[in-house]
Image 1 (cartoon, one colour):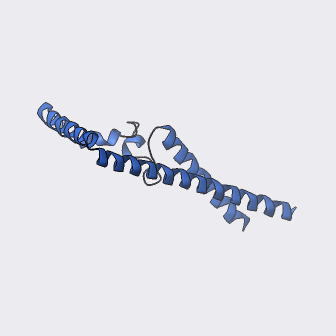
Image 2 (cartoon, one colour):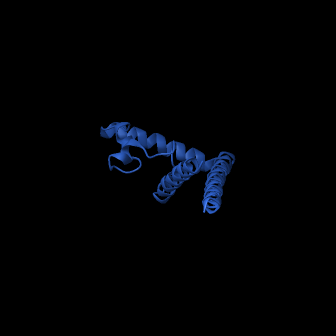
Image 3 (cartoon, one colour):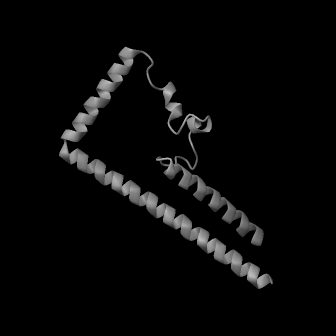
Length: 120
């Protein structure tokens, strides 16, 4: 039983370290790990370079579309409110998930300490 608890505690600590590292890097963890670009030392969004257009005319068109979308979103107050509300909800869910993970770790540590104290 103690081995299972130690293994689960180790796994939770690893997940927490990965989550904290991703949050410190300014990104959100996706799928519990880092992207392919980060694994090659290109940064968190390094893998996106293959998806972006390479010629100047294509880059201009992509920039034009992104700018038009940003102007539309910023000019529409109702849409902007929905986006902000969704962002705040996402942040709340992430913060709640992190708090739950910390609580589970504390529970596992307490169980492990109680089991070790009982074995002595």
